[in-house]
Structures are given as structure tokens and as C-alpha cells.
Image (cartoon, rainbow, N blue to C red):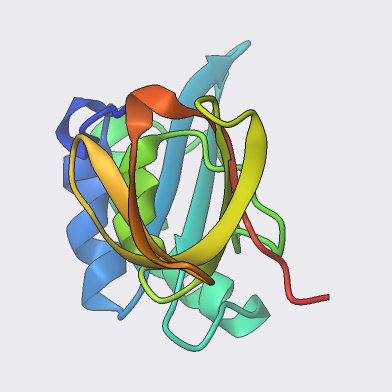
Length: 150
């Protein structure tokens, strides 16, 4: 699994302070141009989960910033929650899910390992598993996802 530092993601540094100022974490920010219009996908997380009102609050706060950054008012902005079974696309997402359940596919044992995120840095994540705390190097994680509570 790759670790892409948030400061390497286009527009992340410009939008993250707005999102965190509202009490949410910016999980994903994707900005691309389709035909003449900008398409923006934002995924947020919060301490108590994320609902429609939360997404609306972030959308209203971030839209003017994006219009200024992209010098356009022709854009589609979608703000969503990560969902119950989100596939983690970037290892830098782990700190946003501290205290939450995840599953990682550990290539060294060729199996899923479930646990709660204790901490992570740019090299590894530490999970509290049923066998105690264990560190997983991102180089050994083939895939990871939130462990839904269904």
C-alpha cells in the first residue's frame, strides 16, 4: 500500500483547514476537469460519523474556496462519508480512522487481519488485534478497508 503525503495531493493543503475547522477530517480530495467543468469529490469523516447535514455544511464552506482556487464557477462538488466498508486508497488515511475498526490484507500471511487503529505514521500502522497490538508495514499491506458494523 502506498503512502502519499497529503501535501502532495493537489488542493489538499488549501481545503483541509476549512474541513478540519468545521470538526471533520478530510479523507479524500479528487479534483479533475471533465469537458469544460470541474468535478470535485470530497470524502470526510467525523468523530460521531457523517450525515447529510455534515456533508451540506462542508459543501457550503468549501465551494467558494474551490471556485477561487480553480477560477471557475462551472463545477460539480460531491461531499460524502467514507461509508461502512470504505477501501482505503492511501496509507495516509489511517490516522483519520484512529479508534475505528479496519481490516488489512497482510501479504506476509496472505490473510485479512482485523483490528482497531491505534496509531500510524508514514511507514506503518499499529492495530489492536485480538492477540494484542501489532505493527503492519505499509509495504506488506496489499489492501485495507474499514470494518463495517453491519
